[in-house]
Amino acid sequence: KNDIILFLNYMNQIYTPLSWVGFYFRIIQNSFLELDNLINILLENQQNFKRHGNGLLDNFKGKIEFRNVYFKYPLCRKYALNNLSFLIEKGQKLCIVGPSGCGKSTIFKILLKHYDISKGKILIDGIDIQKIDHKVLLRNISVIPQECGIFNNTIRHNIMYGNIRSDSYHLQKSAQRAQAHDFIMDLENEYNTILSRGGLNISGGEKKRICIARSLLKSCNIRLIDEVTSFLDDTRAIEVIKTLIEVDKDSTSIFISHRIEIAQKCDFVIFIIDGTIQCIGSHNDLISADNKYTKFWNTIKD
Image 1 (spheres, rainbow, N blue to C red):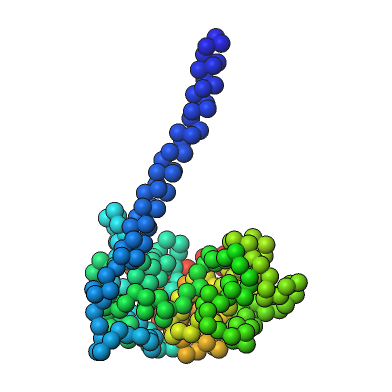
Image 2: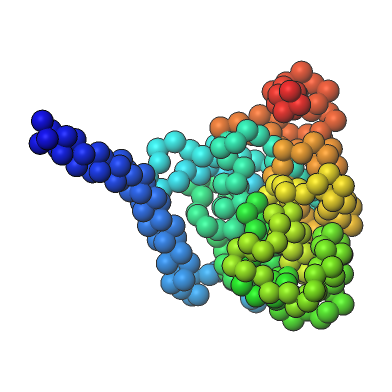
C-alpha cells in the first residue's frame, strides 16, 4: 500500500512538468522562426537592394498599394491573407476592421518586411517594396504597437527613440499632442523620470501615451497604428484620435481598431474575415448596407 502511494506521489510530481512540454515546444518552435527572420534581416546583403533612379528611395510620400497579395506563415498550409487589393493615396486614413485573428496585424508585418509575401505586390509610391532598402523602409514608417515598448531610461529618452536628434520643444510638443505632457509634468523629475523596464512604474494608459508621443516625434509620412486607444479613458482617447486623424493630416495612416469613432473619421474602411476582404468603403456607406460589416458592429455593441 505504501509503495502504491509513493508511486502515485511520484507520478503526480512528474505529470505537471510533462504537461508543459508541448506548450513550451510550440513557443520554442515559434521563437526559432522569428529568430530566422531576424538573422535574415541582419545578414541581408546591401547589394541585393535594387536602386530607384540614381539611388534608393529615401523619402516616402505615402502612397501604398496592395495588388493581389497572398501570404502564409512558414510551416502553415493556409493563407493568412487572400488576394488583398487596395490603394491608399498620400495623406489618406484607412481603418482595418475585423474579428480577432482575421489577418489585421499580418498586414502590418508584411508592410514592415518582417515576412516576404507569397504572391502579388506591395507598392510604396509606385515602387515594389522588395526593391526598397529595409533600413529606408523602417526609417520612413512609424509604428504605434498595441503593446508599447518602454525602456529602462528617462521619459525623455523613451520618447526620443522616435527621433534622437529632436530638441526639447518638439519633444514636448509631441507629448502634448499625445496627451502625455500633463502627467509627465506632475512627476517629481518630469521628463527626467526614470522608467523601469516595461514601464512597470507607470500605468498602461501612461505607457500608451509615451508610445504615441514617440511616434509623433518621428518625422515620416506613413504611420501604422494598432489599437491606439487601448488603456486610454474616453476623453483622452477622443483627443488622441483627433490628433492622429485631423492634426496629423499629411501622414498616410493605417489603423487597426475596434473603436467605431476611428472607423467613422477615416477616409475608408476595409473589413476582413479570415484574411479576405469582405467590403471596402466609407464607414457610413458600409454601415447603411445590410452586410457583415453592419453585423460586426452590432455584435460589438451587444
